[in-house]
Length: 143
Image (cartoon, rainbow, N blue to C red; front, side):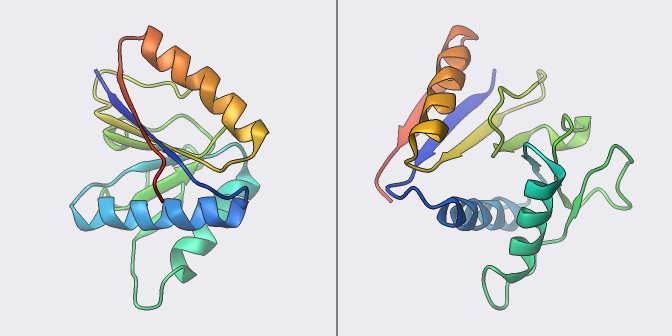
């Protein structure tokens, strides 16, 4: 059963939310995890793709946008609005507004929310669904 971590940022800034996600994605990559970043749209995927190249000088995180085709290499972070392919389901960063389709191989889901009411309301709904599914949910607010 997956463990879910909610990170609630004190700001309503979408940019801050995405930058924080990039830092956590980098941390996951450096620990040897090749995760999936779930987005709502191709536009949001491109934004995260661009930020992963530029968010911190000297940082290199191999990544690509997932369009349904298997990536060229298994050691890459995938970003997309489609459900995660099997190999990338172990760690899922949910930047989308929807409840992710997860399988038994999903070990961790990270939810990064800004402090806007729209984002928080969608997050509350997913939080309840995670709990109803029997997942362990923790919330982090001190950022």
